Image (cartoon, rainbow, N blue to C red; front, side, top):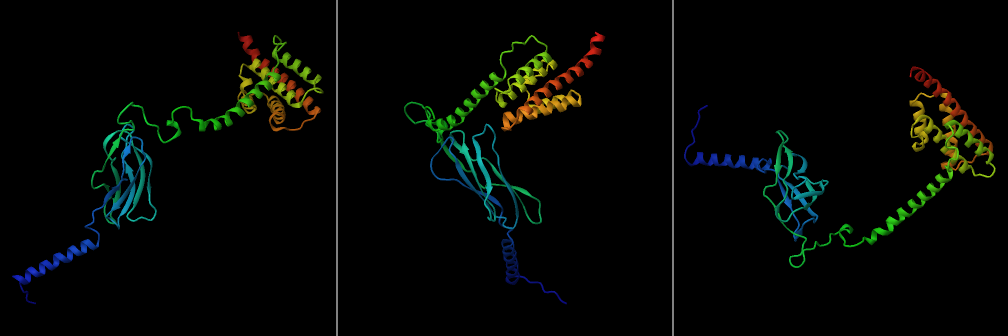
Length: 320
């Protein structure tokens, strides 16, 4: 088939038509729309510490895949991010909202904001705002007169005593002080002055047990359990050197397992502390017979532990 060479006006017209068609296809496919970020700032004066809401709109790349927005701020920089960025649901291309606060005065450029975007058939790249946006930040100090800081917008900056905080503080503090006073009085009643402090640890516990058994009729179960728990802890602390008076019942049982005390000692300690804690903290009802059994179990547990410790200390004394 013969070929015809087009020259002159006919060839020029065809080349122009091809260029127009290619440009139209490129615009329709979105290739001409380069992605960028457009930052919107509120109007009006800004002072140090003000909350400045920002709106970041992605432009271009409608069919591309956008990632998260990041804001480049440092601990000692002129800007701090208070909230965000949060992406607005349903916006395509995406829109982010965030709140920043200026930490210095003067003409401050906004911190750099960057988002990653990837074409459907290409490599991801970073996108920043097309132009730098700056804000004029004024000082909170008055322009003339005494240089005294103006009050902030929250109760922390109000001069003088924050009276609006006084009632919540008292609501928490007064019951706490009353509870502490009650606990100290109860502890002093539970641990009277030890007339027999010179006695050996086991003899002191046995003396306490006889006192408690003789006074069961005239004492309340709570006071008996307080004194029994304190006496048993005092015996363990004097005999083993461990801070038993500062331990909870769970910590005492853990200590017994770690030191490999006999099973009878561990079970007796658990049984006694379970009953006294139930009466002291759980308002458990208890009979006089149960209290006598608990007192007897405490003494028996101490005697079993005494035998165990003496057998463990005998080889050390022989070696020394």
